[in-house]
Amino acid sequence: MKVAVIGGAGYIGSFTVRSLVESGHTVSVFDNLSFGHAAAVHRDAELVRGSLENPAELEGFFQGRAFDALVHFAALTSVPDSVRDPLRYYNANVALSVQLFTAMRKAGVNTALVSSTAATYGVPLQDRALDEEHPTNPTNPYGETKLAMESMLRATVVSDQINPSIAAEDRFRAVALRYFNACGASEDGLLGEDHRPETHLMPNAVRAALGVGASLKLFGNDYPTPDGTCVRDYIHVEDLARAHVMALEALFARRLDGFQVFNVGTGQGASNLEIIEAAGEAAGRPVPYSVEPRRPGDPPELVADSTRLQQTLGWKPRYTSIRQIAETVVRWYKGNPDGYPD
Image (cartoon, rainbow, N blue to C red; front, side, top):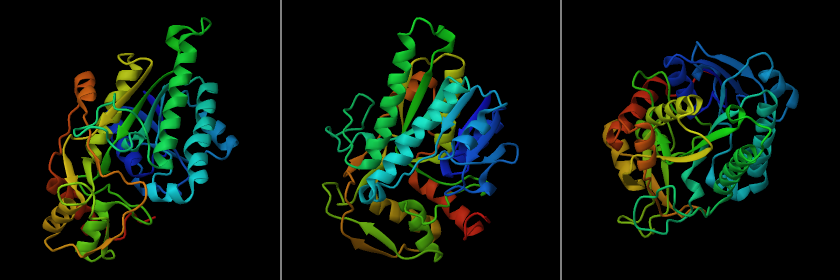
């Protein structure tokens, strides 16, 4: 396949680009590098610097490349930031996605894989892992914008299906992967998480333990969970990247059709305190932290039921231990204390 990867210089995008290249696909990355890093893009992938806010740059990216499929990672992803500035999130995650999919369809590309999130579910209505049939009721603008993007794709798929002038092979088809908490670094230490500023728990806990970051802030210890801290499903980013490649290949081969949603997680929850403990054990020293008030918009618990993905595509996680994941993060920061060189 010739694959366009939008936001492919970012954290999850760069791992997926690497996995696509290593699976034999031809990859072109479109990224404005506001959050991504050129050094994270695989040397055998093309990197085109451009912005979704610039229609000419976006149109130029599609011209002459004859893509078979597109993967869309470009988004703003911070829950607390989305609460503070919802209009910015609706512009970045919804309005600019409309521009992207419009340009994509104009270029004749009808296969799309998009990054969604467990934040679309909101607060669980059941005391068990969430499957894709759980109602969607986001508690923050970030989750709302991702759900809006899903709805837009679903409507586009249905529109093509009921249009008699569009041949079956030319109909739009798409998959949305609802991530839970992506974390980890590559085993070879070449790829890792480098957000500036870093807001995710696992990397910040490791950085604090290694002394390359500030003391960790733990937001809330009074949630209705066993130890009072939020519980999340932490999935290694390489497992997540494999899920992207498998889903995209299935779409392209038409083993998947229409619009499909899949959860991607391990099915195991870990509390914030358990992450702090695992990070300290992997680093060989305790994580300094302080307890702060809850952040608005954080559900107490989100754990994935990924049975649909496992049964449909044969995917399953290879990393099932948070200690194992933390060790890859420690390795990354020991080799790259300042992140990527750019």
